[in-house]
Length: 430
Image 1: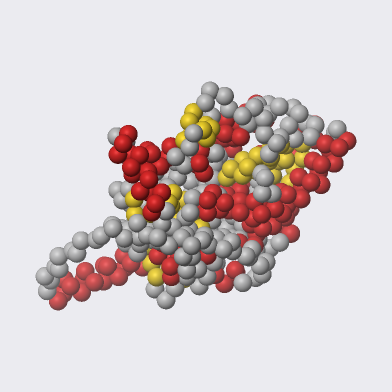
Image 2: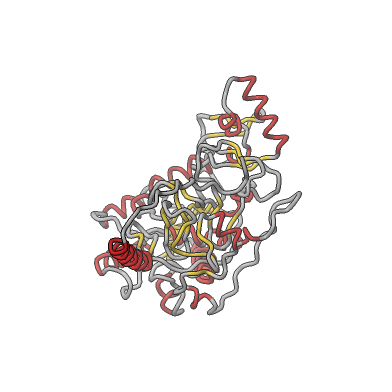
């Protein structure tokens, strides 16, 4: 077994024996099909939720050679320039190096392709600034997963910055891959768990893997089960779990209260997570692509189970409208938050020039509800993302998602508004 990505092998197709005329007809048909597929790829949109249409990628730190004894150095924050503009329309992203391109399952041909995978049978997810490949179709296993940068690095895995992906092995039959390229440190073994919250794959040293194998053999369990139980990094992200006796064990009681601020959002939050984490390293940031506004309650329940009742809440949902979600539903959702808990609403926005009118209208309604509630609820403010986007032409790549530099603008807006508005209201009791 090797440590390189493992796309499924393609069997060679038998050659067809054709006469000249049929061969010309078939060649012409194939050429036409390729043109159509190319056009479809160029305009492909992830219309479900907020993955957005195709677009630019950003530079990756995965091209920095892995250290022989330590994790990768943290990347520098991207500069705010107009350098992103040409890359938005190019089919080749010059900012993605060959190593990162391969790790994400994407084809390298004079550069890293945005719309083609190494294996043509794999699905190319082409959301702006989130291009990667998947095995098993649109909802299959991805070569990159949405884990916060700090956790990705704590798991010992390669972080692609600021593409916001933690490199993953989508072939789930590998179990354990020695010297895997998904690991940031050379010689580490990539141990597969389930790639879900609290049970992400983890890169471990050879001695640690040997120790876990001995425990597995002694207890009659598999390596994955033992590795999951003995992962202190992941235990901290499991509901009602504590680290005790070198194992992660369940408990009936979750933490009662947290002094941390919780951020619950969608793909815009996900893309800006590492930028916000640099500004607010003590915040709990929970953003994922495609999250709908009515999912806030379930995510808040998860945050409470893992971290306790948050000291404050940043509500960064609403970009993805839910048909049938009403004003009363919104008020009922906010009522789940104690009246003494400060809330910052990040006003959602979709550029009406690039989005369907009905979707734009629903998102605008959510923003209006948030403004209204902030005017009457104590300790409640808004961060006007729409105003920030309108004031900076080119801040969004597709009318929804921020550019690389735009992610930093979003993070600074959230951080600044929390200080300027909520700090003032808390001090005055307003």
